Image (tube, rainbow, N blue to C red; front, top):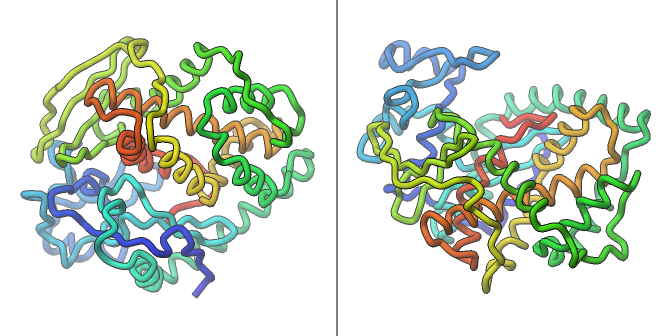
Length: 369
């Protein structure tokens, strides 16, 4: 069995609230060894995906709702559900190592109740040992090539030092003025560091608003419910926000896949709101989680590759973290605009629940298994 990093899930408990069903809005992949069961017992529920690899998956209600096997927020085939469903909310991210990451969009990850997360993840890893081994061989080769290209381009920095510097300045990353200074420096300096970096109290708020809005809307800019992030609220409603150039439409999807519009707003109406009591602490803890995630690092690597290795890793890493935080704060402001969730501890927690599945779905040079 390959070595696996369980640090993100150590000491946590996870339960599966019966009223939720949010994970059933993600179209489940069906592995080759699972296909015969569905071909024999549920042939009409098995289809080919539209993705490039054309894997098998299960049908969704009306093509965009919940899984066809979800009824009354309960799974009709629970004992025979695919591996994809069994693993949620655990994600095995494979780079040149294997790291377990916990999907914080799952409300059951926040209650402090349920099963031991590390033990559940270990059992899932054992059941997928061969797939993890094969993925590790492929991903290790990709990472080796990436590191070589970075060294040749002169843009490789020490990852552990970058992460340590961010960790030492964690509180400052909840300050918009500090984020503004980092974003400015990341564009101006060949290789930036955080030593002696002070917040820019004269920063251009309109530029920060625009950056935050653009980051958040990039994932909501679709009229297809299958292509936008889902927010399962405390009342277990499946909320979807679909954006066009001029309007954000807030709808709630019912169990049959029908949408009911609840409200709308111009993107320009939603402004970044200041953090309230307790909000900074919750945001700081989430930034710490991201700073330790291999998938976040993999997404930074992906961006560097897309930009032809023009930026040093430190610039790309700190700049990416700033954009992620702005995205999250804008979503928190949007939820507050529509639902009055606030910008305190509860409001930022709700924004993380809205955001984290989208974060884990970001392109990387590694792979989730």
